[in-house]
Length: 556
Image (cartoon, rainbow, N blue to C red; front, side):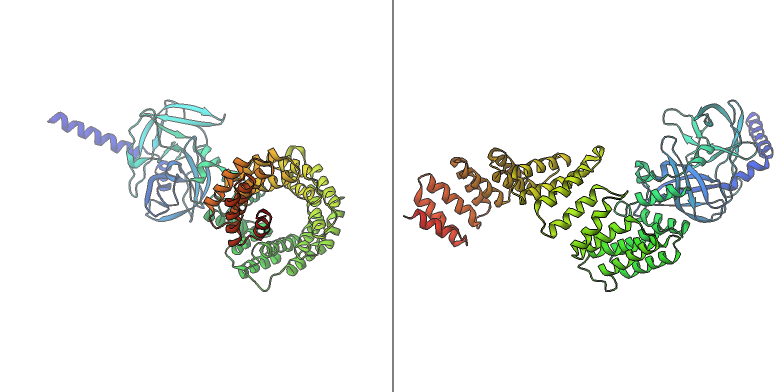
C-alpha cells in the first residue's frame, strides 16, 4: 500500500515538473491548435481531426484525409470560436497533408527554422480549451526528403482525439502534425515547412484527389497560373468551385476582363441576360484593356444569338454584337477582331461581306485552316461553283499542322459533301473515310447511311452493303435503313437477302409503305406476282406514290 502511495506521489511530481519545465513559447503554441470538422454534401458529419494556424489571415495546415469527400468544413479554435473553411490552398496526397484558408483572423504558430534531430526531445501539443496536456516525446528517426524537408518518426501512444495535433520544438515552432502509420504503431509527421509550401497551379483542377473535395481551391498566387485555372474551370464539372474561382479572380484582378466575362456567361447559362449585360458593362468600365471588354461582350451576345435565339432579349441582337466588335476594333485594330466580325456577318446572312473579310485574313500572320474553312462556307451559301468550295477546303486541309491532323476532320467531311455536289462520288467516299479515321471511328448510323448512298452513286456496291449493314447494327429500329438495304440488294440481284431484309423492315414498321413496296418488288421479280401486287396495293393504301405505277406495270 505504501509503495503504491509513493508511486502516485512520484508521478505527480514528474507531471508538475514537466508542467513547469514547458517553455513559454511551447505553451503559446497551444493557442494555435484547433479542431477540424468536415461534412458531406448532405450535411452529415464526415470526419473530425485537428490542425494549426500558420498565418494571421486564416492560413492553416492539417492532414488531408478528413477532407476527402467533404463538401464543407469548419474549425473550432481553443476559445471555442468557429470559422468556415473557405478555400483549399494546396494538397499532397502522398504525404497526406493540406493547407487551407478559413474565414477570419487567426493566431499563428511559427514554422520550425531547423529540423529536429534523431534522439532529441520535442513537445507534443494536443488541443484543449484550457491547460492542454503537453508532453515531451523523443524523435525516433528523421528521414530527409526533397533535399530540404524532414519526415519524423516517433514512438508514442496517440489518443484518437489527438490526431493531427502538432509537434513543436523548445522555441514553440511547429515541426509537423501527428499522423498514424498504416504499417506500424509508430507516429509520423511530415515537415510543416513542406505543407506550408503547397500551392495551387493552373492545372490543379485536374488533380483526382482535389476533385473529391467540394471546398473550392484558392487561386494560384501567380497571375498567369490564376488565369489558367479560370480557363480550366468548368461549371458543368463543379458549379460551386467554378463560381468561387470566378468571384475570386474578379476580386483579385478587377482590371482584367476574363473574370467578368466568365461570370456573365454564368448569367447567360441561367437565361439572366440582364445581369450578364450589367456584368459586361462593369467590365467595360473597370477593365484596363477596353478593347478586350468590348470584344468579350460581342462574343457573349453573338453566342447567345446563335445558341439561344429562341429566348428573346430585346437589348441584344447580332447588330449589337456588331456594334461592340466595331468598338473593340476602333480602339485596337486586331485581326482577331476582324475574324469575329466576319462570323457575325455570316450569321446575319451577309455572306459576301463575310467572305471579303476572311480572304484577306488568310494572308496575315493569323492565317489558319479555320479561315479557309469559314470562307468555304460563305461560298457554299453564295451557291458558288463546287470547284471554288473544294479549293478553299483543300487550303484548309493543307494548312493544318500535321501533328494536329485530327483537327482537319471537319474539313474532310465538308470536302466530301462538296465532292458529292460535284458528282465526284469516289472522291467523296475517300474523304468520308478519312473523316471516319480522324475521329477514331466515332460516327453514328446516319454517317454510314450517308456514305452508303454516295457509294451506291459511285457503284461501290460491296462497300455500300457493308455500310448500310453497319447503320442497321447501330440503329436496328430504323426502317429507312432496312429499306435502303433491301433496295440495294434488289439492285445487285441478291433477291433472297432482299426478301429477308424487306420482311424485317415490315416487321419493325408495319405502317411503313416503302417496306411493302420493296417486298412487292422482290416477289414479282421472283415469280410471286400475286403476292407482289398485293404488297403494292398495301403500299398504295399507306400513301406510297410509286405504288400505282408498279401495279400498272406488273398487272399486264
